[in-house]
Length: 619
Image (cartoon, rainbow, N blue to C red; front, side):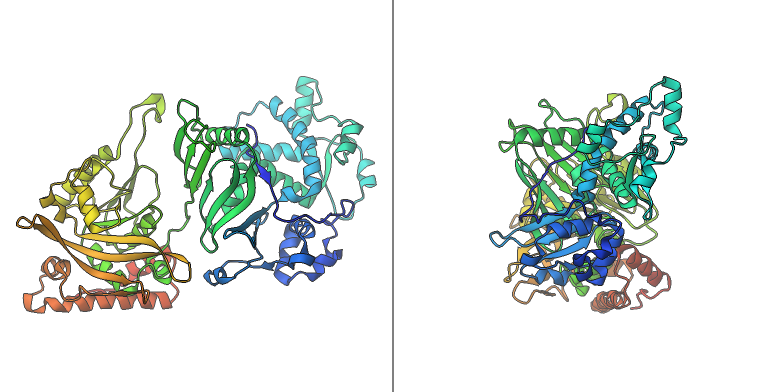
């Protein structure tokens, strides 16, 4: 498998680096190192290639970048960010300002910046190919392939100790080399024999008498990282996929890779493709890597990457005039919680308290909005409000939802030929019908788009609450789409859906693009006289104050008629149910203040609160 690579186009003229200087074993002697802040020195000690990058960077012109161990949302207010933050022990990201564009630069700093590693890599790859080709092992999984790669690399590398000189090492006698010796003995061919002198000089590489390449520990670890990145992981995309602050990765064809960053919003990376053949080759290899080959006959692939991220690839200039392109929607290891949505002002405590009441008592809900309005993120956060003892079934075409409950069945649709033996497809419609036989307390559907909508409404009619996302920018448009092809719900059945949340990505006066729940609406019913559908806006976002108003207080059909009836509350006391919404809002506030903000932590604490009877309704 070829490497998944592209070109690096730095936005500054790199300074010349002294290639004779051994900064990896003697970085503390560098004058630049002594100028670095304490946290940057710690990073350099573990990853010396960071210092080599900083030596290339014009510090005299732009200053030493600020180093952050993690990014807070306040950082986004920086006008000309020149900052570096870590992604893992080998990878750092440099955010660098572009004075001529609204998008700043995103520069992944990897061991590939080390000139010694770049020089040694061709020699090492040649030795590795010779040994791997002769191995009897046939690794299947990525873990097995990684282990074989690491094992073979150890056989051909001699790691130089800090106090050893090259002269001392080259004087050593060759010893047993394990895997290599077995292969030599079996095939009577020394595949890792000494490289010829001209090649060694060309690549500035030194070897032991038995043909092992001599590297420092930092160089060895860096080469191991790069080999795994290019041969097993997603190549040049690895830093992007590892960065927890990235939401979307987009390549429109020839040119740079663009990203949407949680803090710095739209950025352009220095990783770019210079011609259409290069990007075509890249997407073909990427599709093979995820075991979804792409051809001119089948030029579009929708798939899930090993980390759960969602990828769409379009191949060739016939269907994409700027050349092959791809988009990756990053998968968050831990979903956002409702308290994080409150921190981001997507919603507030009272809205959350109201939704907690409605969801706990089995109301059906659609999270509706345009593309990239954060529908799935918000829907996922709301799953924590489902009663902890519930059985939940999720149905998706690409797995994105993460449910905190233990009794959770996760079902994913399957296209034609994706199963073993080329079996037929399993649609979301099929899975939804099957779910109705599994006696769930809640059914979550990734997105209602077509015929599965009719089954979802059938489920609601038979008492199965459904939560889903839907593509519509208003309640009127949502009803219009539900009652038209291809869903075709009768207008009189629409009120089986209890709640519609309209969410949108809006631009604030300061230019920030933010996500807000614009309104939380209760669907009341169809009026045969006016042939219209009535709904009540319970909460509405005020764009002027950036706060949520509660115009529906005192007129909630769901709270007063449905939930109060379930609880056996007499009619003259039904108005007191609004205090329960306030109580839940206060519980969330206290949990927030106590630091239970993460998705899992919050769910466990909410479960404890319920078990201790603190949510008991006494009216």
